[in-house]
Length: 361
Image (cartoon, rainbow, N blue to C red; front, top):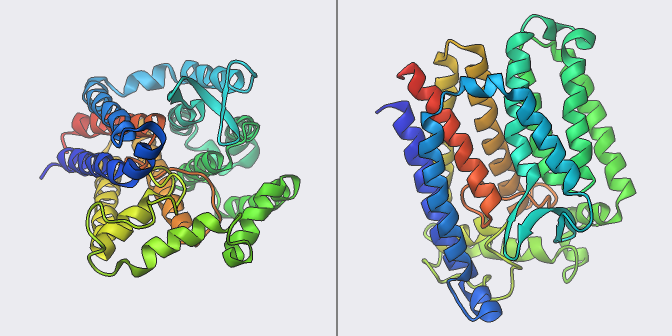
């Protein structure tokens, strides 16, 4: 079977499961809050259809056009990130000024900046393949841009999205000719930076403490992860069955968003987890093969950067849900409720499909 078809089918299945599970996880909360059990799933279904159209259109647009306009795309993303910080223009949701929108519909410029930075970094790396061996001449310029955007995102603040972007771009640098010693230094500096961010923001420290021992504050900072573990723990091999989640009955807060994986685990058990993991692995494996077989450096970096961003975000979200890392506020691509996340994820796949089809792999 063609790689492009497997990439599309894995994406379609993930997004379809996402729509179904947004309904299952949100129906109780949605009925209580809006008097309509289908409130959230109607929105998600609309974005799913728009995303499918987006995949079709982007799969037909020559990906090399992004090379030509990489600088302009990045500049536009920068302007949007700056504008969202202005009171009266950007909306505050869940304590973060990171949204443009009207009513229930919103767009996060930080989500758009993922694609913009990946496009720009792909162009930069394809043009400076030899220079990346040297820190000052090759890596330092792109690092300045990466951390400028990270700084803007942290002003919202949106630590989770910022971390996904930085890690994705570090992986892109890792597959270049950059020296391994650079990544060791960046790892040490990154840990120091994370420690500093925790110190200056008490709520992050509370998340760390609740991660280490959520039962120290079971009704406060540890509440969400405890309820998530209660959903996953007793699910067994096949789970409780579709629609039979207990935790969605006002135990796990807004389960259709960051913690939707807990509801999937509760209702479909270990088999459900294997299905989701297999679909993400199919998407990743076939996209990496497309990257390896692409004879254009820009296409190689672009396809790899887009898929590694999706996979890192998925891994980070799942690690949060099962209690391996502190709560970051990162959604599960294709599955969590949210138009911005879904559309950007599907747009990424559309671009990947164009790269795949160009090579006829």
